[in-house]
Amino acid sequence: MSPLLIGLHGSLAKSPAKGVHDAAYCLADTDQGQVLALIESEKISGVRHDGRLNVALLQADLAPYAGRPAEIISSHFTTFDARAPREFPLFRDLETLDCSNLGFTARLTRTLFGTPYPHYVYLHELAHVLSAYMYRTTDHTRFLGLVIEGSGSFAQNTLFLVDGFRVELLGYNFPILSGNFFHQWLSSLVFDAKREDYDIRSATPGKVMALAAYGDSERFRPALHAAVMRHQPGQYMDYRRQFCPEIERMTLSWNDRVDLCASGQALFEDLIVDLSVQIREQYGALPLYYAGGCALSIKTNTRLRRVFDELIVPPNCADDGIALGLAALHAFLEHRTRLQPLDYRSGLFTKAHDGLCINGRLSDSDVERVARWLAAGEVVAFVQGAPEIGPRALCRRSILAAPTQPGMRDILNHIKGREYFRPVAPIVLDSVGAQAFKDYFFSPFMLYDFRVLPNAVGQIPAALHIDGTSRLETIPDDDSDIARLLRAFAQHTGHPPILLNTSLNSHGRPIAATSKQVLAELPRLRIKHVVFGGQPIVLS
Image 1 (cartoon, one colour):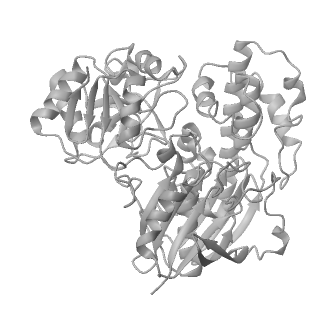
Image 2 (cartoon, helix red, strand yellow):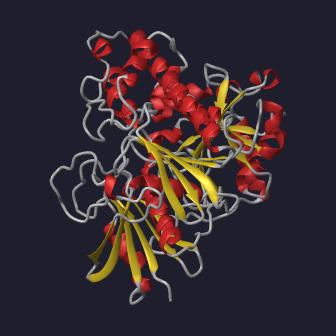
Image 3 (cartoon, one colour):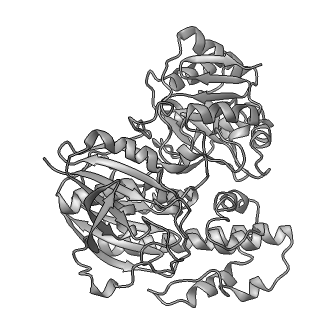
């Protein structure tokens, strides 16, 4: 019997570890090539970007496999006990690795819940690549992996070539902007956030991406570009200390800050696209698997898709995907097994938590009832199935509304305590996507934006960002409740089968995942109309 794989990302200590966020675990079976459990800690604890692993739930998930051989797989970000603060880079012996055939950096023995297991430690960056590979639609045997993030085991950005079961490091720390440019530098200057660890993550990059459309993208670009070019390829960029002094010395008005967001976002995109063009020219038409927290930048993704014929970005592209990627990486490199991929229907799952999956199906009459709510301008919480993988609501834990009223975006932002400049994403039936959105393609993970066609602008005004685009989620034309609801809404209103969709969470909290969390959020959000599993409910 092949061993059970235990992919761990996060801290097993009671207190958070410095630099560790978005903890998760993944159990996988190499015999069947299947993922057996996948949990993101914040979805259980209700603590946004929680860096602590849920020890009790992990232990319960492992209990049915007692006595079975198992292997622990982690990266340098996984901590098993309290430690002194660690400094970047976490892995300092890159020169000792065979970069033409990467594998684990250490093989240890680790005791977990009283049982000793072999423990393999991998580069954080490689786990990102394999997390993306878990969303493949083709079993590519030769592909590129690009990772751009705040920081990994040893780098802020990396490029890999995977050929068969060999992994080659092609380059790292290219002179482009990384996630810490948003989390540390822009957060501090634009939103007055602390530059320390993950206290600032809630400020950016989502706010920057939204606010950028309101500003002058050229105003601060020369100074920012000069700051980047002061760094040599391979050099780590420190955004905490004098990254761009000429801007840091300024007293910034709100308009200045908006322009700084616009300039920073535009330069971030341009540098990545320029690098990608060079990669394409050098390595040809290989598929690109792209991950790291920066892969949540939808405008960058949209531009990259024009460079690469095949671009695969996972929904959990940030560190919430690391545990999955670690399990897939170890299966790939050590067991020569490709775990079966996940898709848009996959959600978080475990056999050890009763309230995580909220089952049920709406009757035809109930679908009609909910469609009438939406057509009348009601805001509806939609809760069904297993929670979404990753940070974006994909109609499992969503707030839905009609996009036909121009003010509905402001209503939703007010409900959630969000800023005026934050857009709200539309969901659309796949069969009509091309009728409303330019250059439409199937996009189930809300990772790309599309320009709204002129004929649709007046029909979905609340779904438009100020730049005329929408961050789109595709709903397949199937018999799911959400697809049935879109069709019923279109029949009631005469408008396209398009609704607004934002995540079911109040300000400062992660998406409500468990039934208990959902019931706690509804009064905070003051939402009275709810689909809970297969039941439409009107709360008093």
